[in-house]
Every structure is written in C-alpha cells, then in structure tokens.
Image 1 (cartoon, rainbow, N blue to C red):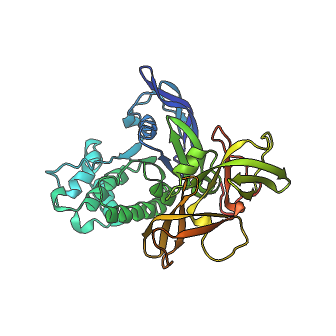
Image 2: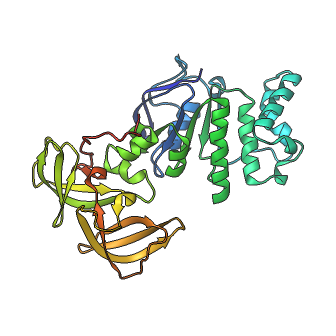
Length: 370
C-alpha cells in the first residue's frame, strides 16, 4: 500500500497562511512532485505529510487511516533531506543500519536489509567507508539507503539534489528514477527545479502562495496549463507572452491580433468579447524560423543568441519592445542585429484572459494525459 490523501489541508503560522485548502490524492506507486518558486509552500506541505508540522485545518490520511494527529514515527514514512545528515564517525553500513538498530530489529534482518539496499544503490564496495571518504552523490545514496531499509509506506524527498553540482544532479536524477521503477514505492518529491519535476514525476503539483494551482501529468501541464503562472513556470526556456486583442470567433477558434498580425488560435472564447485585451502564449520551439511557412509572422531584431550545440536560442526584440525567445537549429546562421521573421502556428498557441486563466483549448494534445 502507499496512498496518501489530503483533504482541505491548511497551515498558518500566526496570521500568515502558508498552505491554503489543498485537496490531493496520491495513489499507490505514484511519483508526485511538489514544485513551485521559493515561498510557494512546497516544503511545508511535505512536512505536513511527514508530521513534522501540525495541520491548522483539514485531514491527512495514509492508506485510509487518519494520521492528522499521528506523530512522525508512527506514519511509516521515510524522509530524505537536502542535507545528507550522516553520522561522520560511522561507516556506511552503520549509518544505514542505525534506525533499525534503534528499533531493535534482529541482527540478521538488519544485515540482510542493509546488503540489499547497498546492492540496489551500488554501494556494496563502500559499506566500510565513512562519509568523509565518499563523493556527494555517494553520500546522497547512503541517505536514500537509510530510508530504503525501513521499508516505508512512502518516500518523501525534500530537494535532495540541491547540494550537488550539475553533472551529479543529472546522474542522481536518473538513479532516483531507476530506484522508483525498481521498488515501485510511493514517492513524494519537492523541488524548485521544474526540469526535475518534468523528468521524474508521473504527476506534478504546481504550488503558488500555498495554493495548488494545477495537478496533472508533466505533459498535461506543459501543453494545457490552466493559467499564465503554470504556463510560465513549466518549461525551460519559459513560454513567450505577447499582448494581444481578441478578434472574430468561429467553430474553429478565435483570431488574436498581435499588433497588425492576425493569429488564428484553436481555443473556446465563449464569454469573451471581440476587442478584449488578452495575452497570447507560445513556446520557443513552436516559432518557425525556416522558409515561407504560409503562417502569420512576427519580425524583430536579434538582440543576442545562445548556441547550445544541437539547438540555438535567438532573442528577437519586436518593434513594440517585446522580446521573443526562439528555438532554432544549432547550426543556424545568425548574428546580432539581424532582422528575422518567425512563423506562428496558432495550433500551438495559448490565450490567457485578463485574470490570467487559460481559454479552453478546442483540441487535446495526444500525449497530454492526466
């Protein structure tokens, strides 16, 4: 088992509301990531699940059992923190076994569990070393091993890769994904890095100011964000946002005018008036740089460009001062000061109402499953 349910969970520190009426069901074997900017409440929400903070209102259930008032030690959850929190004077073996020894587990059982966790995490050759003799990635694996041996209902990760360099973060991200596939355990993971969220999760919870703005699969959030905040937070580089005006609507969608350029967008504009100010959103990879595509175009001056090998990012300043990020082939010929036109395919555009909410798409992306 390993299901976790949050019903109307809120948390306040004095007069400050940090978590606001969160309702969420985490199914057995789910890998759910809480993501959001600093101060969004993601770590506080994880601590509420763990029992490290008391709930102000609402209810938390684990496998159908109300644990709202249950102390952390009786929730059978294993938490891995940003800091490794290893005992420096103990070997890897004893660090991993410490919790089991405190629980007075049988010595043979402890040995078996530690050896199995070491095998899974490829730490067998390091069991007799102390933490000082390990790399950062190896220390984080020891911390994960200490959680694995407990055979918990669910794993809770609080920004476990933040202390690692870029290369190690990629390696550990792959190892955590592999570990989840091998163990099949329910996992709740907190990060500020939306790339970690996109690559690890089967469901993402996007938080802002303690509110769960959207819950869904990574591609559902990417292709069908519910509002401008989610659209801008998920995806790197971020989505382009351009001021626009609603034009005429028909069964195929609505026109959006970006300056003098008319862009047909496949969204339902019911309840919105022609001439209303909206925001058009389009991701860098959906702006076309090659040839005459027959699509509406926007033109601007190249301010700067970034070559990343297989792709190049071009930053175009339009006549109204807006800057477009354009994803282009890595070997595209470009220089600062060039005048460039890019095609806009309305099928990949989003429209956001003045309140930031997304106008509903008329077509569902085939990979954007909930």
